[in-house]
Image 1 (cartoon, rainbow, N blue to C red):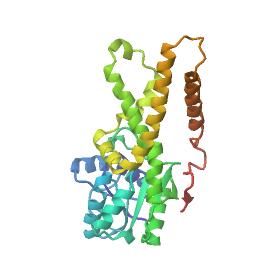
Image 2: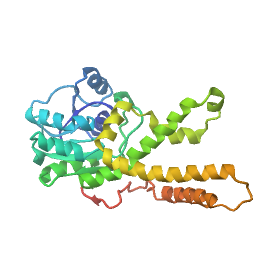
Image 3: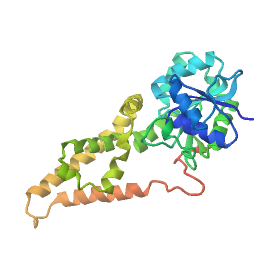
Image 4: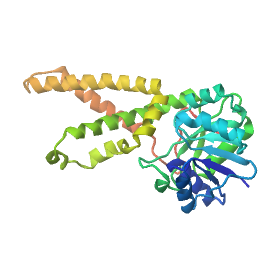
Length: 298
């Protein structure tokens, strides 16, 4: 029987534990906040106790900046035979784990591609990862047994394991998750300057566009700072496009409507490219999502 421990009983950790419970596995729940662990246990996510002997796999559901230190701590305590994490950045934790002298043969980076803007165990969902990709980023020294166990974890949670390098993963999430979070947040921040009469006109489009801006600012500061270079590269290109649109709109606002102008073509081009880009987002299907260029591995 697959045995597991979950370190960190927030949204992701508790959701993983609930999914494992549905498969007949009772995870050991570990958290520096005893109340969070008890709340997760009350939801049926597992038991709040340190295992008497090492479990097969420990899932480190902690922010990126804490992964390496927590890995070191629980490897020394003998919590599990193998370890994985669920942080949304992979290069930095791997580098820091190596610097701390962690046993990297027994560690495989992981990132389930599912989440919510809410946080904490009460926001957890047992089907949060169903049909979603679960990225595995084994290093050159990760042992095969550890990779198999993390792949099995993903499948037990209803996800589809895919393998990527750490750097490829970080560039991918910079484009598809981290930079979009910044854009949604900056757009939502513009609403602070609106008066009540303006905000009463808000529609579903604005709610959809700014939904992810409700994420925990502290956690996102960590995520963005841990993947800073890749996110900055995406946002720099976005800023160039935004500048072009701003200048086109300014021109359209000052010139006579009948005058031929390049600004109309620039604006139309930006809108067309947007529809084309959105059309490239994979649509969930019965087989789940796959990451472009990633190799499936069970």
